[in-house]
Length: 266
Image (cartoon, rainbow, N blue to C red; front, side, top):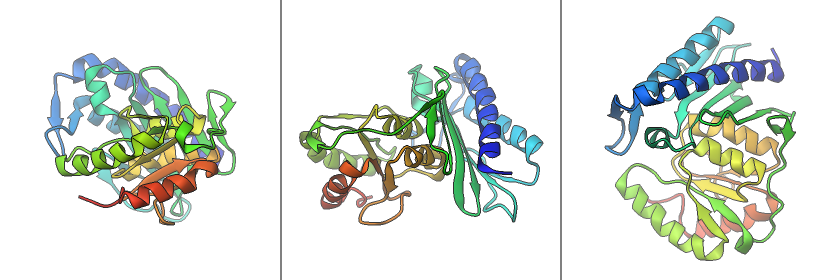
């Protein structure tokens, strides 16, 4: 099965999952737990949506494995199989408060490389997609990222961790970044931030602490839109840092964030 066929499955499953998330919102917010810290919330909808996605993928691709945020899952798929990387509701705090920035994110990984991904804003229905080598798209329109070339005129997105100590470090970093850019945005859903950068609604985006399910689909969409998606100082994108920016901004942001030890601290 090729990248486009895997993407078609992901799009169908994500659309159904997003419908479930939206329907459950009023019910789910009365059943709220926490994960890593008291501010890291998880709702009944997160769990229900992930279970729905797992079941739907198993029905279509019974030999594949799934890595999900809420229930974990298996490692790399065997020969000929895909590993699906799933965030059932990215932006759970937004979901909890009724802010229209929460999404279902599904990516397909083959032989260790993400080859297809979809991010669907469950509140609005907006959908971003990409398949390896086929570009990035939003609802039928090809994405090419921002044309910005000056950091001082760039709108930069970021996000903050749940742990207090890491937040303090991130706040110190952003305090130094803010005077050097047009402005900062923090919208609370990493997958949607990556899609916004792919579309040019943000000129660039950086964040420390993303998990695989935060990065997989949105990262592919950003790369297929022509952005460089990396860590700092030549390292790959991952939990230490994700920097997504067009080539004209990437180098200067890399230097700035490296000088500020943005991928350091707690």
